[in-house]
Length: 241
Image 1 (cartoon, rainbow, N blue to C red):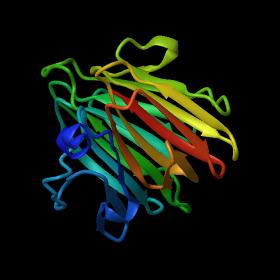
Image 2: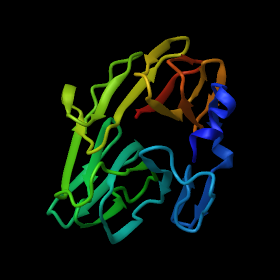
Image 3: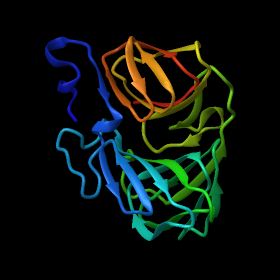
Image 4: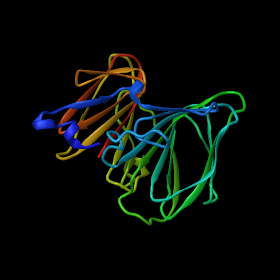
């Protein structure tokens, strides 16, 4: 996804990636929407955005999941919306991630892991996010934190330096979460040269006058400041790169 799509002939544009335009794979036990090309879904216009490579919105049926499989040279973030995600990896980590928590696995030189719906009766709904690291061959690692959910403000949950208790992303990306009540607004100012991606998890918002609903994403290029107005109670993620 090239910047020319969003800043053609000097025009400042916020590009909305509508939820229904995403790729879809349905394996019965798994329903997965792909914001960017992934697996059998390929769109040369959506190969990623800046350091972002994957945003998959997955719903996993009770007791089902992804068997052990390998990764390398990727920062893999799991953000649970509903349900419980059970994780095991070749680093010896075994954990359960629930709403209000975030996990990052740095694949680095290579790691294998499995992901399953921890519940035997309820579905699991989560976002799987891949970020290309700043360098290859890093030592594999695992992090998991509880998000301090303060309403109506940006909450830093990932950063290159781990400030404010955030997970450490091995790339120049600040990741924020927000949980806003209907009628509230949040503003964010980008440093010169930075881009943004807003992923709406729940509800409806207005982003600088553009309407977004759950599942929509927005690429933000050459925009100094954004304002997100909550049309309903909402939950969203913002990547500042």
